[in-house]
Length: 243
Length: 165
Image (cartoon, rainbow over all chains, first blue to last red; front, side, top):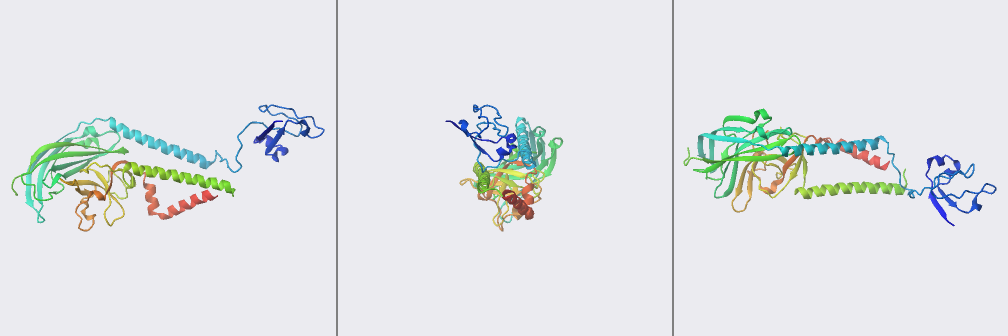
């Protein structure tokens, strides 16, 4: 005797009141289990379609669906909340992807910038009361940074730093001037300025000091990774004596 | 009201979501080498580069700190970290330690007014990380939640209600 054990979750069959009361159906191959007087149950294979065996008893699809756990709740896939959540997640993912691609496109750019600095005059060169040397100078700064700009560039931050070595410090970097270039048109410039920020040493090492003037730039993107590079211009020298 | 096993399933699902979020956050902390790999810009002192409400991605490597780096640092006695650019670096010959001076791009003066009383330089242990990338406007949610805590309580209450009901 084979026992077919299946759970009926066919919505059409649920309309029949007989089925409403029977979530679990046991179908046996023994003819004597039919109602007395009714025609015998047709013996059908597990994968057959619906067979009407009596006017009142409707057998539902004997599919072998996996037994459904009685405690799980199937969510409504068409509710507003579900759709809004799916849409929002998709939108955020696509946005992140587009931002990443925009940032990647920056690496395709191969820039060729140039810069030149001329120190016109040392305005004064003194020892401060706290014992540190200080210099003030006037410079001509010219540069062409147009090749750094891409469509994803928000601005380029450029600054000029004096770099030198002392017995105590292996490296000193002091920013003398900086500027923000907002667009490609402003990227080719020539300015005549004294140092914007004070050139003060940690000590009294600046007399006769040789230093490099390095032009650094930081390309700031509208979205994504920042790039930075520099041009080193060596060969500048401070005077031997205070003035 | 759902049955007990249904409620348990909901609680387990919620626990798994929170656990996944925590794992992702800790992995980020590990990869970036700093305790807060993502910060929100609160002030306008680095405009026009970083506006208020932008998100900054931080990364801390053993590379030496050089002029021009944008650093996020903590000042002793202040609880909110500051995001500014390095304008002076003095690196010692023997130990490799650095003295750093910073300044916000749109500020006129350097940051000595922001440092602790009597402090002239920053050292490496003040630095939380270097900014390597940014995402505009993405931090406004955090700013609104921090400055109007009512919205935070309303949101958490609504979430709690959704879970219970």
